[in-house]
Length: 121
Image 1 (cartoon, rainbow, N blue to C red):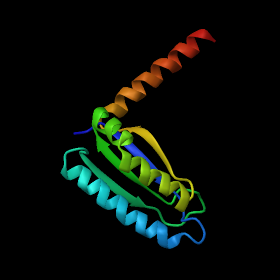
Image 2 (spheres, helix red, strand yellow):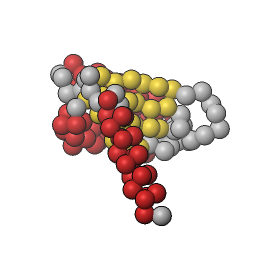
Image 3 (cartoon, rainbow, N blue to C red):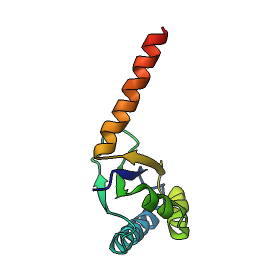
């Protein structure tokens, strides 16, 4: 199972760009589905949040190995779609994420830093 991920968060559509946001959503779904079918992603999920007063409206969670996700981020179509998303939805962002066993590894790294900082104080 893939332990690396890309978290692609987004907010509400920009005012007067609702139709473009819907069209982009469909294009992103098609792009991620095709990437998965070609073996460039291990899988992906789409999560939409109910209105809650915050800025995050939903996210895509793309799963894969580090090398797969690095290649995907450099892909011209990925970059083009991300640039368009920045124009039609609020708060669009892409960030590396950890999943599966990688979460335990990150917690271990953090705990080590906590102990180091406490030892210095």
